[in-house]
Length: 414
Image: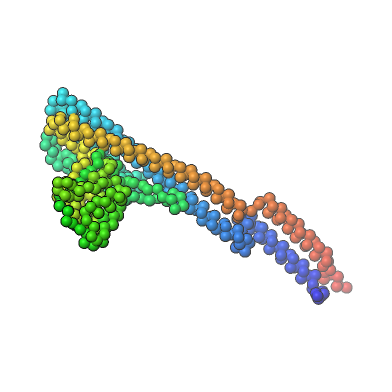
């Protein structure tokens, strides 16, 4: 039951005017922000969806940026690798020409000069950096020079020449997220890209009586292999062969030492992660030495990089050794060209995959943006219509109130 008083009409009028102003202010805020949700109370369910959609959209945009960065890096890297492939083709032409037996010693020395310049170009490309100054082929050690060069006196040369080229990076894969919990493995290891032949390591220590004294683990090409207490050399060989690493292990039938051979062209990376298994096997020095140059002097090694191959060609030309050029050196060059071609194809396929991820992220972002619009955006036509209706109601209310309270002070003057 409502009590009727002289103030009732005035209070009701003021209340509904304020209510209309609140609704007008809400619509104004929605038009200004282009969103129908100014606070959680406006639509709690839609607000929850909107937060999740915006979060996902932010991640999708980051995935697109990651894939675009990868695509740019692959494109730059492909250019340098392709240039080294062209250089190796020229090196092969010189090797074939130098092995025909028709050249004089002076001719071979002249060809050796060109081979030496091509070697410098190979090293320069392998040490290339991107726009940010990061090494392209040093693994994750992007602030290091990928390959260190050592100069020395070479028989037949009148000045110091490149004597050896050593890898200064690592083989760690860089994982880049390009979709929700989906990653691309980026292999920037120069010891794989610029390697020429499968590498073979031959140990000389007799391991027939060896047994692991404790539980430990080793790293082989970045893959951890667990060694259990009591394991003998045959168990270690079986675990290496079953690990999925591109390395096959065997027991040497003559020395009873451990032999390791890669199934593709790359440099073997050996490291004791826990314990000292590889040190006990006579393979590596103490842990103060870092791979891949931590092998002991008792381990014989064969197979080298494309730089080793070109150095061997140059030195054979300086010596006039056409037999070595036409057999061992030429075969190594062919293997190096084959490996670079394979790595170049891998870089090209990685680039295509990155481009596909860019396209998918762009499509996903468009779809999620539509969901965000559906949940949060205002309908301009409806909102403006509602705004005009409120203005009309407000004007009608003010007009009606003016007629209700038409008396003024003049009505009471005599």
